Amino acid sequence: MLKKEQNDLVTQTGPGTAMGNLFRRYWMPALLSQQLPGPDCDPVRLELFSEKMVAFRDTQGRLGLIDEFCAHRGVSLWFGRNEENGLRCPYHGWKFDIKGQCIEVPSEPTSGYCDRIKLKSYPMIERGGVIWVYMGPADKQPPFPEYEFATVPAEQSYMSKRYQECNWLQALEGGIDSSHVSFLHSGSLNTDPLFKGAKGNQYNLNDLSPVFEVVEATGGLYIGARRNAEDDQYYWRITPWVMPNYTVVPPRGDHPVHGHFWVPINDHACWAWSFDYHPTRALTHAERSAMEGGASVHVKVDADYKPLQRKENNYGMDRDAQRKRIFYSGIEGIGIQDASLQESMGTIQDRTKENLVSTDNGIIMTRQRLMKAAKALAEDPNYKLPGIDPEAQKVRSAAILLKRDLAFKDAAQEALRATPGKPHSSV
Image (cartoon, rainbow, N blue to C red; front, side):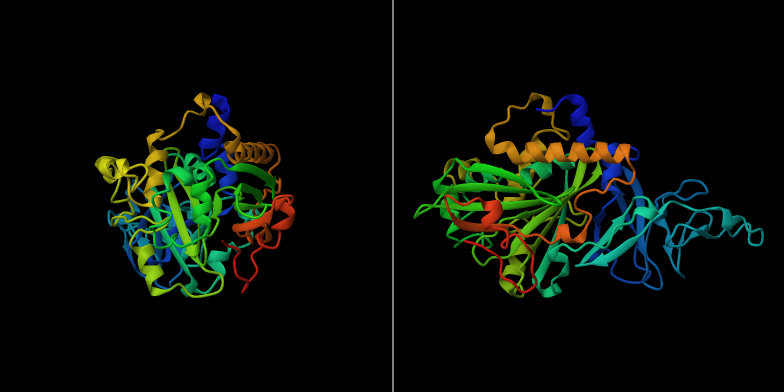
């Protein structure tokens, strides 16, 4: 368990907090490219790390992310007119460019007054169908992200996002917990179109007591869960976690590989980003249609990216389906099965009341590494955070059979390295 001050440290990400300062040193997913589809499109509200902002694409197609509120009287610039390379406040016509610089104050046209007015702004880039933001010190901006899903050709990758009403960390902790699959997702392993047919599913269902081994990686951790298999072998599912919030779920058969980013909106909600990609081929029409329809880790959402199955309608709970073990928890859909239980803990889980066991070793070590890094950065602003180096981001998950006398950290090294054109290791 964590002490209260430790729980506060790992869950609070607002301006000036230790974990908030850590997150701001990384490029983070901010918007889907389709949310800002072209020059002078509608602006989009965006809250990240308890900061309220507005994003837009100007007349030249350049991306901008600035403080949501006009420097004049505090009007939300979401109401603004996106025109002629700037966002104009509809209240009194003050206009701001993509860097937050005020470029027009109509009531003071010749005074140079606007030159002294500047809103907070952050740089954005576009890669892999995602618009990314960096919110840290300008002189500490890291290289652009190199996660494999964002660097393969567009036809090989799919990304979705959804709102989740809980703190980012309890969502992340669910993403790195392989032991719950044999229970919560057991009804979906052989029915979900992006899971079914893999031999590894039967190992999950036949061995309900996985043994966890966790080893440090350059960018975070490798979390290995082993189950019994035939012929003196173990079935290993190895999940990489890259600091601070990137996870890749071990694959199944030749299905695409999926994973997540868990990005704090504020301390009580997060964006759950979910990707699927295949390293060596285009996604099929059937696969992409299944993802768009909420299969695998994806979820059907409304226009605001809020799940159609949510707290207000009990996530579509079906007690009859639960009794018949069609869906172990009575809720349909792998992504929302996770979200429903993570949200049920409250918006910030009280970790002082936990009783952890051996299968929680990955979660324990993740918390330790987060706290260590946040404290180190607070003491030394030049501290080199794990996971910022693009090489540390070029990792894969793996589902693999290994002889029982082999350590996965040695025997699976090649399987865990993202190499262009190389098939993923899967069972």
